[in-house]
Structures are given as structure tokens and as C-alpha cells.
Length: 331
Image (cartoon, rainbow, N blue to C red; front, top):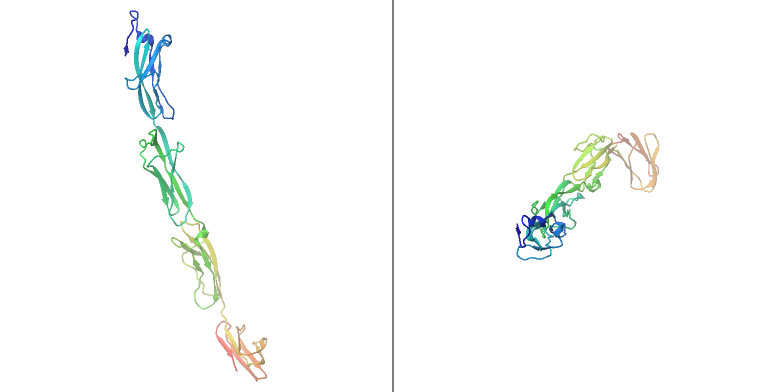
């Protein structure tokens, strides 16, 4: 549209001669100010004055600008001393900048307690949104999502209104297994004389919740039943402690059953030199003593005890077993 204020030659279009062109701006918020452009044909630039308004009422020769996200309509009036005054308008459009938020991630070691991760980063450095948070937690070994709350994608903006959350990326809390040593596996061996009973190793763990103890005598075949040994000899027992929250702990022990020994008790005369002989006539023990002597006979047969000064008689006892029984030579 135009408003003609001066008369020109017949059959001439003043608006076309002036060639007023007003161009708006459209872009994403970048923190800079933006405005429209207004031009006329070169022949009339020197004789044309531009006025600008944002309400169509108040005019100025200074162009309006816009920095924040939003829209501003700018009215332009070009007045030429020959052709007259003509008007047009354009818009400054600043769109909200799109932001991606990424939740924090972390890797932690299992510690029997709940662990957590919180916070997020923005694709625009240092930009945070009121009421928006990200968090995730877990206790056992595994992977847990670190998720956002307080976000509506493409709606939630920062306090200035210049940024809008366009995308959120969840983070991850990863809890890894604790070391095998922290399971506190302890294996105690058994060693004793044959008694006709079954015996095994003793096993304990510090962190028993969720822990399974397995046993093996060959290191390849495993069972939750502890191996036992009754007969004379040695069995090696391999032990492992399995827990989803720990590396596998291993250990080993032995079950040793020794031969049982019979006991030979010899009473002595106090203050006299006495001797004890085994069935082969070998001196087993000889001393000047009081009280009694106790030992484990290594041979079966007749043992002889002699105290020549006190009693010239030879005292004997027949040892019938080296693994069981108690035999006494007494005066």
C-alpha cells in the first residue's frame, strides 16, 4: 500500500519508481540483536528518509532490534521528497535455541549400600533449568538408568525463555563387582587321629548374604556338599565362594586323618636307674626318674621294664596294638 504526497508525471507509478523493499529476519536465538532491512532504488536513496515503528503510531529513524526469542513486527515508512511517502512492514523472528541435556554417568564398586548418581550437563555450556533434575540409584551389581524429571520436551524452557529442551539423554550408573578378597573367605584344614568319625575342612565368609560355598576334590567338579574323610590319609579340598556382587573367591584346605596310637605307661621307682625294652630287646627308655613314663609303642609284642636295685624282677606287658589301647607296666 502507499500514500502519495507529491504529484508526478502522468502514467507514472511512484511506488514502482521508489522500489521500497522491506525484508524481515528469521533465525535461532544466538545472543545477538537482529533487525529488518529497508531499501529503495538507487536513484532515490539520497532523497529518501526512513522511519520505523513497532506500534504504527510512534516513529523513529532508529531501526528496532530483537535479541530474545519471540517476534517483533516492524513498520517502515519511506518518505521521498519527489515521489511521496510509502509504507511496508516485516517481522523479526527469533526462535528458541534447541538444547540437549545429558544425564551424568558413573561407575562404582559394590559396597553393600545404595549408591547414586545425579546431575546433568547441557549442550549449551553452563545452562541449567529450574525444576529439572536427573538421578539414578542402585545397590547390587548391574546397570541402572539415570533419568530426568521435570522435563517436557520442546516445552520446558530456561528462565529467559530463549532456550527450549529439545532432547534428553539418560545416563548410566554401573555398579561393578567387589574384589574377591572382600568376601572374607577363610578355609581351615583338619588334622587328627583316626577316630572312626567323618571330618571335613571348616569354611567361613565375612559377607555371607547371597553367597554360595562350593567344594571340589579335583578342582573341576563342584558341589555345595562339603567332602569328608574318615579313613587314614589326606584329602585336598578346593573351595570357592560365589556371589553375584563379588569376584569369585577361592581357597583350599586339607583333611588329614593320622594313625591312632596306643599308649604305654610305665611306673618307675623313684631315684632308681630303670630301663624299658621293646620286643626286639632295644632299649626304648632308660633314666633315673620318678612318677611314670608315657609313650606310643611302635611295635606289638612283649615290652620289659627293669629296675634292678629296687626289684630284680622283670615286669612285662604284651602290647597287642600300636593304634589303640592303653598298656601299663607297674610295680
